[in-house]
Amino acid sequence: MTLSAPPSRRPRVVIIGCGFGGLEAARALRSAPVDITLVDRTNHHLFQPLLYQVATAGLSAPAIAAPIRHLFRRQPNATTLLGEVTHIDVAARTVHLQDGPHLPYDHLIVAAGATHSYFGRDDWAPHAPGLKTLDDAFEIRRRILLAFEAAEKESDPARRADWLNFVVVGGGPTGVEMAGTLAEIARHTLPGEFRHIDPAAARIILLEGGARVLQAMPEALSERAREQLEKLGVEVRLNARVTAIDGDGLFVESPSSAIPSSASSYQIKSKCMVWAAGVAASALGRQLGAATGCTTDRAGRVLVAPDLTLPGHAEISVIGDLAAAHSHAPGQAPTPVPGVSPAAKQMGRAAAANILRRLAGQPTEPFRYRDYGNLATIGRNSAVVDLTSPAGPVRFSGYFAWLFWLFAHVYFLIGFRNRLVVLMDWAWAYWSFARYARVVTGIVEPGGRAAQPGAPHGGPFKAQARD
Ligand SMILES: Cc1cc2nc3c(=O)[nH]c(=O)nc-3n(C[C@H](O)[C@H](O)[C@H](O)COP(=O)(O)OP(=O)(O)OC[C@H]3O[C@@H](n4cnc5c(N)ncnc54)[C@H](O)[C@@H]3O)c2cc1C
Image (cartoon, rainbow, N blue to C red; front, side, top):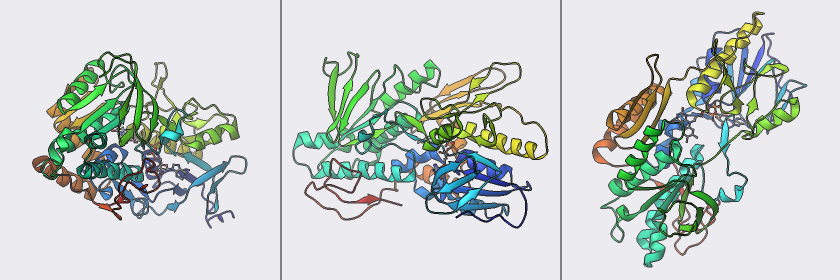
C-alpha cells in the first residue's frame, strides 16, 4: 500500500529517524512549503548524552526523552509516524515500513544513526549489553542493581566477589561516564543500605584497548581523566584487549605489567559487564550502498558528497552518525566530521537548507562543520573540557569543567520541563548522594534460574527495571 498523496502538490520530504539530525532537519523546514513525514521506530526523541544517567539510576527516562508527536504538535507541515523503516526503494522513490504504508518522497533525509558493534562477535551482546536506547539503559540498570542484591544473599565469598565485579569495556566518553558513576554508586550511594556486604568493596574495572582513555581528547586531558577515575576508585586497565566474553566474565589480553598476574591473557570474573567499545552505522547505510552503488566505510557509514547528498542521487541526503561526511571550510582541505550530536544537528540544518535551495532552483552548498569542542564527565565534581576558540584551545578539568559540562547538557536538553527536572534531580543528588531511579519491577525468583531473555548467565531474579 502506498500512502496517497496529500491534496496539495507540495514537495514531499520524508525524514527517517528523529534523533539529533532528523529533529533538527524537520524543525529547519517548519516554515517551508513542503509536506514532511518524520518516521521513527521509537515514539521519542532521546538525548543520548545523558543515557548513562538512566542506566545508573540517576535520572528517570522521561527526563531525557520527549515524545516526538508532542514536539511537532505546533508544526502543521509535519506528520509523525511510528514505524521501522525496512527498505528504501530508490528507483520508485518510496520508503517502506515494516508494518505500514510505503511513503513516497521527492526529497529524503536519512538520519537513522548508529548502533553497537561487537566487531563480529555478536554472541557477546547478551553478556555485555551496549548503551544506545532506553531499553538498553533499563537492562543495564537492572543488572547493576540486581548484582548488589545477589551479592547480599550470597554466602560463598568467591561467588559474592564475582557479583561485585563490574566491568566496563571501552574507554571512550560513555565508558568513562559509566565507570565513574558506578564507582560513585558503590562508594557513596549504597553504603549503609546492605547488612551482609560492603558495597564500597565492589570493584569497578574499565578496560580500554588503546593506550589512553578519551582518545578524541588531547593527551593531557586523557591523563587527567584517568587520574580522576582512579581517585573515584575505578581500576583503569589500558592496552587491555577483550578476547572472549561469556556468562562468567571475560578474557583479556594485555602486554601491561600492571595486571594482577604476569600472564598476557587472563580472566576477569563478572556478572555485570557493559559494552562501550564499538559503533556501527544503521543497516540502512549498507542497504543504500547496495541500491545506489555508493560507497560505505568499514563502520557501514555512507560516503556522502560535499552537500551531504548521495553521489548521483541529489534527492537523498544522509546525515548524522550514518554519514561519513567531511567539513568543507573555504581555503582548507576537507576534514572528517566526528560522530557527535552537534555535528548531527548541524548536518540536519544544512540538509534542510540545501533542499530549500534546490526547490528555489539554486545550487546547493557544501557542508561546513563548526567544532565548538569536546566535553566528558567522569563523575561528581570531575570532568574534562576542550573548547575550540578563535584564540586557540581552552582546556580545563576538575570541578569547573564539571559545572560547565552540567550546564551545557541541561541547556541542550529538549524541553523546559526536562531541564527543570534534571536540574532538580541533580541538585538533590549532589547534596544527598542519593539515586532514586532504582525501582526494579517483576517477580523475584530465588534459586539461580534464568532471568528474562537477554540475561543468559542467569541470575537469581526474574525482574525488570522500568520507569
Ligand atoms: C550513550 C551515548 C552517549 C553519547 N554522548 C554524547 C555526548 O556526550 N556528546 C555528543 O556530542 N554526542 C554523544 N553521543 C553521540 C550522539 O548521541 C550521536 O552522535 C547523535 O545521536 C547522532 O545523531 P543522529 O541523528 O545521527 O542519530 P540518533 O540520534 O541515534 O537518531 C537516530 C534515530 O533513528 C531512529 N531509527 C534508527 N533506525 C531506524 C529505522 N530503521 N526506522 C525508523 N527509525 C529508525 C532511531 O530510533 C533514532 O531515533 C552519545 C551517544 C551515545 C549512544
